[in-house]
Each structure stands twice: as structure tokens, then as C-alpha cells.
Length: 417
Ligand code: ZN
Image (cartoon, rainbow, N blue to C red; front, side, top):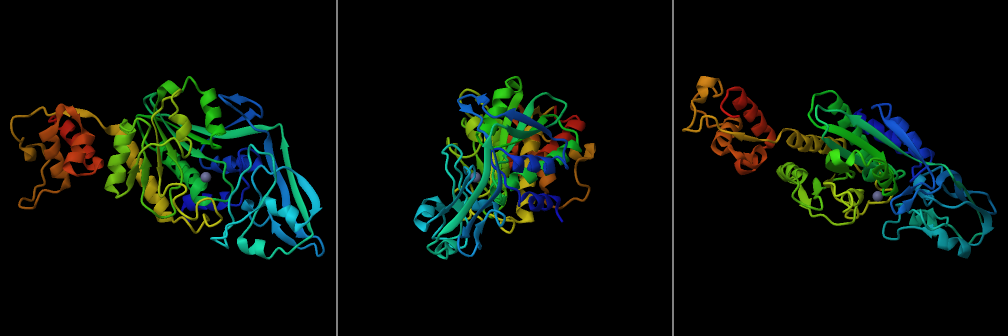
């Protein structure tokens, strides 16, 4: 089985939230593949305008028929059944008393919605419309055996050093329960990327962050002021499967090196590019004026634009291995541009050099020029000491990788410098 898929399957059943044992167990599973450092920050700690919430854990939660004892809705069957951060409750109540605590999706009667109540203290259950319709009039015994108590917020961090101290931050939120595309796809692909980067030489230093959304990224930002000046690019990853084309969301500035790299890669893969907006995932925090980082986001179909979003239909069958692998390849292509784009000068600019003399031209004549030859010709034609390789790739209509390999060859031959 693809290791990306294997991690998804192990992470799927865990009851994650902003805090609690589900996040700890999630980070422990990621740490089996990469040497993750887990940081724990006490509840109540301020993070800019926010305060870390109490730690939440759920032991059990169910709605039972008071007469028969039959469990009608049970957290043990699906983590989405309990509203995240539900307060404890135990009692016998009528249907009318239960009703305000129920959430379902009439338009998708077999799906369970995902709901949270982080900052408004209440309890609730999410269930399919069919379950709701079959509940009857009650009475119901309801148990919400949860704890909200001083504890910790935990997040995972991993640094894969390069030869330069310039850094790329790759961030993926870790706070959603059994939802695969929105959450787990980003985690599992990021871990795979970290493993691959650790096996090869690279210039940039890569820092991976696995933190709960909003308060988690703000906590990291509040504790890493000394890292921020080294962060050249921030890439937020999530929603990397689930059909639909690759979609890159630009940084607030919109024209940073990360934007140019991602637009080239996503464009060539027939994906789409969307402009910055101050809504979405943790790019909201990284792009904030006070930090002013260059944070872009890679997804496939963005949040809120597919019906399965934030429902039980975002399950293991909703993402395919091929989608996740293509997303990983696209991320690596973006990183290749960030690593390798440079400005070169043609050192033999008086007409076309005789490439065969340098061993650079295919020996069989008569064929039309292939991509590698065209890449060399474009580089020689346009490398004026001011035009980056990426811009030449765009003009040539060729992938950056092909231009980059041709540039390496021409540099070795002394024709570009
Ligand atoms: Zn979400």
C-alpha cells in the first residue's frame, strides 16, 4: 500500500480537535516516519490576540432510547457524531429539549456534518438526516463524557536543513477529526515530502509545521520571532485529493517568487490560480500584516466548493492515491523552482554556438529539435544576465525542470555563467 494511504488509514479514526489526545496520537503516528519534535504549550497562554483554550478530551458520547437503552447516535461509531469541544452533559431529556443540540444535512441525508463549538460553550451531536428522522419522540438518555480542563495545546515541528539558512515553511493543520481531504491529505503528503527532502541535497532549509488551525499557527508564530526573518516562502497544504484540478492561492502580495513558481507549475498541470483573500486556512495568519510573510496555499478544489467538504463524505474513498501523488509531484516541482531559479548570462553570445562541439547536440541529425535542445536554444537566446530561467521557461512554453537541466549542461560547458 502507498505509505501516504497507509498513514491516512491509521489517522482517520482518531478524534482530533484543537487540543487533546487525538492530536497527540496523530503527531505520534507522523513521528514514526519523520523525527518530529512535539511542542506543548499550556492552556491559557496568550498568542497575540488569542488565548489558548482549555484542553478538550472526549471519552464517550451517545444518545440512547431511554426505554430500550439502544444507542441511537454514538461517538464510538464516528468521530463526527460529537460537536468538537462539547461541554459535559448527562441527563434524560425530551425530543424538544434534544432538538437544539442536533445537526444534520437534509440535502445529503446519509452524511454526517462536521461542527465545532470552540469558543461558545455548548454540547451537540451531528447525525445523518436519516438517523434524525428515525429518533422518535423520546425520552432520551444523553451522555457527553468530555473534559475541558487546563492542559496543553500540542503541535509538531520538523526541520530538514539545507545548505542555506533561508527557509521554506510547509504548514498543514492537524485539528480535524475523521475528515480525509480537509486535513489528513495535507499531513500525509507533507510527511512524505519531508522524507524525500531528507534523502537529497538542497539549498533551502525546510521547516514543517503540524499545528491546529488558527490558534496553533498563531502559537507557533508567537514563539518563533527569531525564525520569521529567515522565512522566504510559506506553503500551506491541505485538500490535496478529492478530485478537481490543482488550485494555488496566491500570497497577499500576489507576485512573490512562490507565486511565480506555483503559477508556472500549476498552470502547466492545467490547474487554476486564485487570488488572495483573507479567508481560508492558516495562510490568513502567515500573510497578516504584522508578519508579512509570503504565504501561498496549494489544494485541489478549495474548501467550501465541494459538497463533501466538512462532512462524513470526505472519507478515505473520497481521495485517490493518484491525486495525492500528483499533488506531491507538483509541490516538488514548485520547490525545484524555488531552489534552482537563477539569472544567467550567455558567455558566447555572437550567434549560435556549435553545440555538437560541446557534446550537447543529439548526434542523429534530421530529427526536429526535442525539448532539451529547444531549452538550450531558448536559454542561449534569452540569458541576458537579467532574465531568470523561470521567465525563459514560461516564454518557451517548457517545464522549468527541462530548462534547469539544460542550464546546468550549458553552465558546465562554459556557455552560460
Ligand atoms: Zn476544515
